[in-house]
Amino acid sequence: MPPKTRFSNEDIISAAFAVLRKKGWEEVSARSIAKTLKSSTTPIYTYLKSMKNLESELVKEALQLLRRYQEEVNTGDKFLNLGVGYILFAMKEKFLFRFLHDEKRMGLYFRHGEKIWNADLNMLNEYALMQSFSQEQKERFHFSSWIFSHGLASLINNSLYQHVPEMKSEKQIIAFLAEALLIHWEGMKAFYLAQQNTPKSEPGT
Image (cartoon, rainbow, N blue to C red; front, top):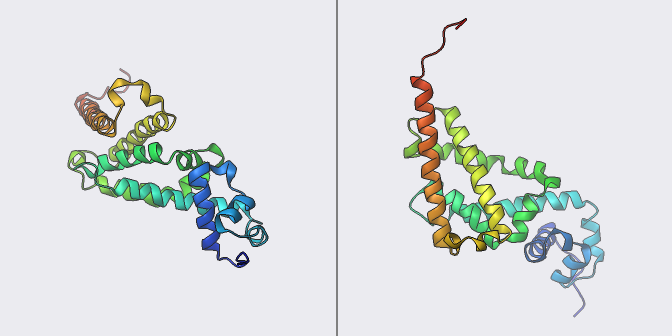
């Protein structure tokens, strides 16, 4: 049977995503996509005239998969599930995590991920621990929580966590993140409360 010569853009994006997920961005090429599709490279080259467009589509695909990880019920806490999903994505989808967080495509990452970020902020409005926080404080909490989760996810993505005895399993990682989230919340709450109770200095004093 001769190789198929016509493919939809969705076929090509799907094949490119399969290569990216298994081997990394460096291996995404007309040749590797054609091999995945069992095709000649000719129809692939037609689409790949705009590698930037393909890159943008792959960022969206990777973010959709990341979101599915974050929507999994790994704990009884919806906000904690976001961080757990982020970390499990970094652990199990090593090439996708590195692809998303390469500085060359951070603009694409933030542009396509803005809707997800805003949805997470809206979730905080219903989050029990956040009821005493202002909107600005919720945003700071969300951002600083992401910084912590991203740092941990980066360590896990590079397998450095394996040298830490307390983080040998997914269960241990979830427990560690849950404890860190609670400590972070308690610290921020105490900080904001202290600010409210600190008398303002009079001008000139």
